[in-house]
Length: 505
Image (tube, rainbow, N blue to C red; front, side):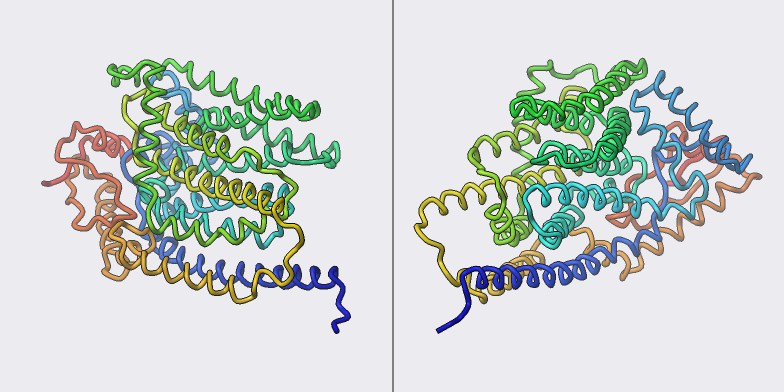
C-alpha cells in the first residue's frame, strides 16, 4: 500500500509537468534558432531601395558633409515637418524613415531585419509574459507559446521582404506593431492584475512608459494606431464595469494616443496624398467592406502549416486555461470580438484607398490574426475545461498518461513536417536558405556594390545602371526603371546628388 498522500501525488505530477515544459522550451528554442538562422545570415546581403532613398536623402547628405549625429537628427526633424505639410502626417514613422541605416553607411543596412525581428520578438515576449502572469502559468509555458507564434509569424507571413528586409516598409508596420505589443502587455498587466499590488513608484513609471509609447504609436501607421486606441478604450471600459477606479489612470496614455492620432490625421500633407485616391468608399461602406475583406484574407492565411502549429499548442493552452482563475463564460463573444478587431485593421486602407492595402500592411494584420487565433483557442479551451469540471464528480488519478503528450507532440510534429515538405507556398527560411545556397543573395549584393561604386563617383552625374540579374524572394522589393523621371529614379538621384539615374534596359 502506498504511503503517498493525494497532495504528494499532485505535487509530483506538477513537478514532472514543470520539468517537461522546461525541456520542451529549450528544445523548441533551439529549433527556432535553427529556423531563424537563414533569415539572419541572408541579412548580410540586404540593400536599400525605393523609399529608403526618398526619405533618407536629406539626412544622408548631412551625414556625408558633417558626420555629426546632432546635425542628422536636426535634419530628420526637418524631414518630418516637410512631409507633414507636403505628404503624410505620420510624424514618428517619418522620423524613423529618415534615419534608415544606409544613411550612415550602405554596409550597415544588414541591421534592418535584426531590428525588426528584435522589435517583433521583444514585443511578443512582453505581451505573453503579462498574459501568462495573469493566467498563473509558468515562464516555460509562456515561452513555448511565444516560440510557436514567432515561428508562424516569421515563416508564413505574406511578404518577408516588406516585413523584415526593407527598412521603410518594415519600420512603418512591423517595428511599430512590435511597440504596440509592448503597450498591450502593459495594458494587460494593469487590467488583469487582481490585487493591484504594484508599488506607487512602479505604477507611475509604467504610466510614463505607456504614455511615451502611445505618442509614438499615434504618429505611426493608422492601422496600428487605431487598433491601439480600440484596445485601450476596451480596457478602460472593462475597468469601469468592474469598478476598478485606480485603472482610470490609463486615461492619461489613452489621451496621449488620441491626441497624437489627431495630430497625425490633421496633417495638411494628408490631403495632398489623399487626392491620389479620389475614388474611395464612404465610412459606413468601408466598415462593411472591411468585414468582407477580413473574411477573404482569413481564408487565404489559414494554411495547413498554421493549423498544425495551433494544434501543437492545444495541450499547453488547455493546461494554462484550466489552471487559471478565469471562468471563460463567453467564447462566442470573444471569437466574434477577435473577428471584429481584424476587420477594423483593414478599415483604414479600405477607407483611404478603396483597397486592402499593400503586403506590408497585411503582414501585421497576419501577425494579429495568428495571435488572436491562439487567444481564441485558449479562451475556448478554458470554456471547455470549466464545463468538464462541472461534470466530473471526482478527480481522475493518473491522468493524463505520461506517454500521451509525447505521442501527441510527435504526431503533430510529423504532420507539420509533412505539410512543410508538401507546401507550395513561400516559407521564409526555406526561401532564404535556397537563395544562399544557389548564390543568388551574394550575386544580388555584389551587383548592388557595383551600382554603389558608380553612384558614389563624384565625376559621374548621369548614371546608367544594369538591372539586377537575380531577385531573391526575401530581399528584393523593387527597382528603378529606364525612365529618369520615375519617382524611384528621382529618389536615388537626389540621394546620391546626381543629375539623372536610370536602368540601361
